[in-house]
Image (tube, rainbow, N blue to C red):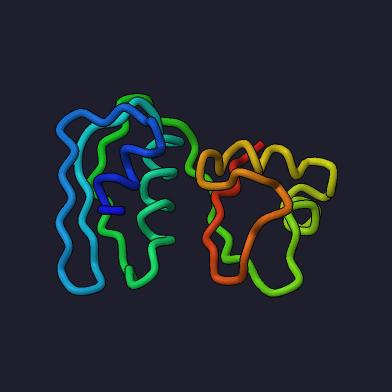
Length: 120
């Protein structure tokens, strides 16, 4: 799948989408509705094998607090990550929802994957 195809598969509306690849760096530009949409696009591109750097030139029309990002380690689960960030493992659905559609199942995460951890 192309990088454009990956972004399109997220079903996030992007005005004037531009994607340029230079070796292991991808530059993405355009306008999206929210910070959340912006972060999901950056994460999806950053999780592509062979991409080391995402140069984020996206503009979010509606600003909201930036989320934290977390790199999944061996033995992690969304509930373990939720406990570390929120103090409550039962808040894992917050992380799952913040990473849809990249995550299709809350039990399927892998080491090296970057996750968006929203502020609550």
